[in-house]
Image (cartoon, rainbow, N blue to C red; front, side, top):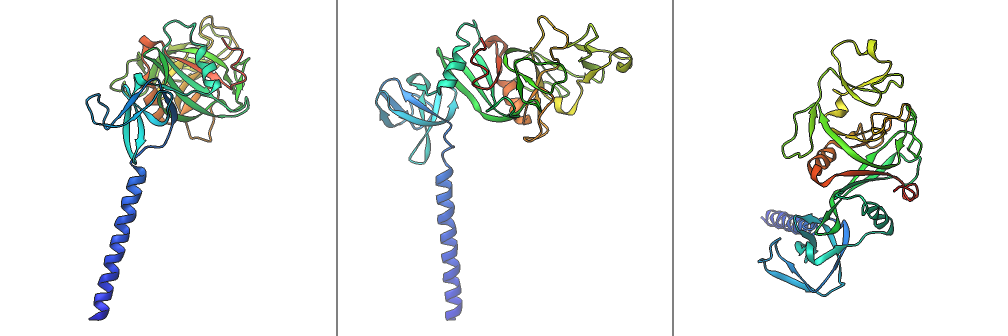
Amino acid sequence: MKRMIMAALLLLLVIIIQKTNLAKAEAKTNCEATQFKIVMKSTTDMKEKASATSKTVKSYKKNNELSASGRTGNWYKVCHSKKTAYIKMADAKEVFSSDEEALLKKFDTRKGVNQVVSVKGKSMSETKVTIQAYEKKQGEWRRALKKMEGVIGKNGFTKSKKEGDGKSPVGIYSFGTAFGSKTKPAGMKMSYRKTTNYDYWIDDQTSKDYNKWETYKGNPADKWKSFERMNYELYRYGAVINYNTNPIIKGKGSAIFLHIWRGETKPTAGCVATAEKNVLSLLKWMDPLQKPHIVMGTNDSLKSVK
């Protein structure tokens, strides 16, 4: 009997310990990981929910700095007592590095550009990049979406791209149409072109169709020396990056897209690629009315880009 009681007590103790550990783990994960810092622009109330009428859980003075995990609508998400709380966007400004400030300042003279996708590498030969979206809200630049990992051309970045060099072009470019072999995703504002078996992007430098999307129902090998099929697995979703499009200079490079990657260790032939969920997030976030642009390169290489 004593052994049975002892066994029952031990089992109860194990259950209590497990529940305690689970509760601690849940408490630790109630708040999302820190993404960036914000600074109060004036005396500010932290709210229990993302609503001005919600309960105030704490007040902060001007210039107080907080860690934020992101933004939902017009509210920053912060951690308070191991729970997510909210700071009104209008009451805070985001803290940017000097490199981020220099990057975003390049768009002050580009009228109407209120959305920017930054694709940054640590060096010109690096193939792994960090992708960060920014948007101008209430007159200030703010981060949009979470930071993403991506890949570029197998030979890194270049400031003088040539056809077939396996490099991604440094610079600032607008976006063309979104595209994909799947039906246009719900909520996407970008123009979208569904690909077919007859759609090709031409990289034949001798052709008048160089760096253009062409639809052709004959044998493409009879018409062009080199081409890409647009109805392709990694192009389930993507967007055209307007590189070498106006004017088109033969041999300067073609078919630069944002598309789905093969994997985080597998670079492209010159495009920007990331996980499918990231491509979809970016395409749904981009709004043609906000003139989304992409900026590609390293901090040093972008210093001379206007």
